[in-house]
Length: 121
Image (cartoon, rainbow, N blue to C red; front, side):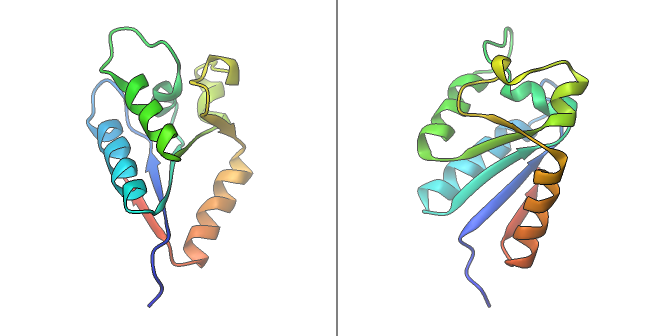
């Protein structure tokens, strides 16, 4: 049995109507504190809102995202999700990034082939 050294957390849920973003950020922090490489991969347009900087009227997501980034969590957003809501890299929290659909699918294949943890929240 192989040891889990990295985790991919998939997020597609609506930021304002779900606890999924909170769970994704909490899980990522916990994994990083255990020394496990953690990546949050956002692939839905409503999830993409999570990476938008200076959100108004939301929970304290920007601070929680920054805490994750400071711990070394990678936060990536699918370009299709971002483009559907008209969001560009400049509008995103610094340290988060937009990736292509090809990069997203390659990441899923990589984690699967390496028997690493993939979570859907």
